Image 1 (cartoon, rainbow, N blue to C red):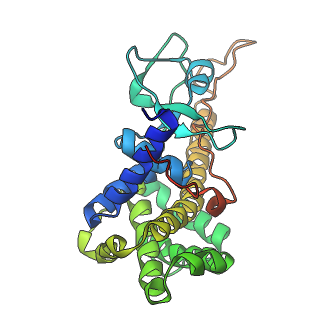
Image 2 (cartoon, rainbow, N blue to C red; image 1 turned 180 degrees about the horizontal axis):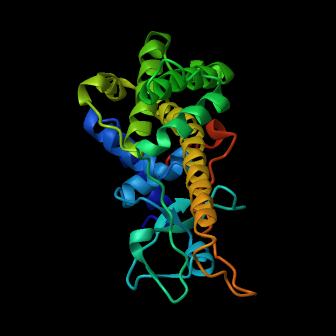
Length: 289
């Protein structure tokens, strides 16, 4: 009888086949990955396999100690491979939907983008990645940045890609990677998506397993860079707006008494996106049952 490591190894293999089986399955995976962009591709794959609707995952200690939230009774954690362990083992995370606030719970602040954030995001993407914001819509800038970062990632890891992707598929692989990054950004930022703009997803079903892994790792890495930048811009905007409102109300509202401290919610950041993303991107052979 297979042990847990073997069972989850088989789950990885089955899920990789599923997300590569059709454009709709690939898009479904990207939607889950976009909500969990601080996790590596292997972790995103496992989250999709076990709880595709997950929007904010963290481990027990984070929910219990930092956020003062309890794990709901009967909840099964989402199993992830513990790549930092000295031996094969699993670690577990829980989606926010499987938790409940206790007394003094810290508010969970998941970000979303609205029209008032667009200019700040525009400028942050330009500053961070060097893609001008002038004369382009935010969506155009996102797309141009996705092209630039995907190209940079390809060139930085050219040998890795050439060993896994047949030369005749290199162009279609690259185009699919760019389209997948753009799709992920649009999904997380609430941008309207036209499915006809993502016809390159049909390429996924033609890729071998190693190429699918390379595609997932590429999209995860590039999307994470951009979404982290977008998140930081939105949080900075909200913080500055709050401070401005507090200054405006300073004269009309009573001052806090001595010792009263405003509690700031910690950032929900339990993912472990590694800088060596390709080295850790599901390079392990699936464990046979």
